[in-house]
Length: 107
Image (cartoon, rainbow, N blue to C red; front, side, top):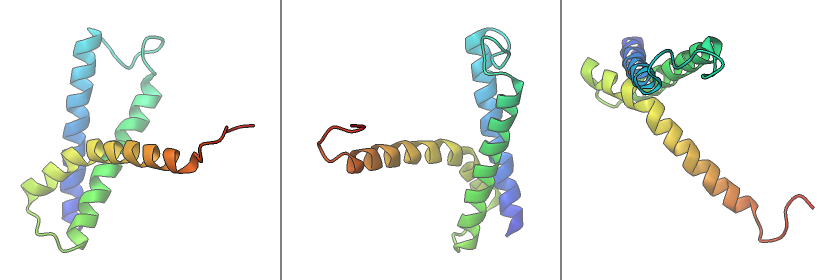
């Protein structure tokens, strides 16, 4: 099972490399470089987190009995960071609306 986590990690690394190349193309240089970008430390942390997300979700899928092959595990690793970010935005929007009872907040 742990092999699928490694395939998911590889897929997430592919995703991060493509994001990196796209950002550099848009910025016409080093997109992460401070002061125009967030800095190298932030970029390194983001890479580690994206790879952890891809690896964890792929591993959880393998443990759940989902029939996986290495190519499917790589695909899950590629898509997991983007899908997780989208789900998190939806959850925050829903939870933000649920906490608002119609009255003034912060008063």
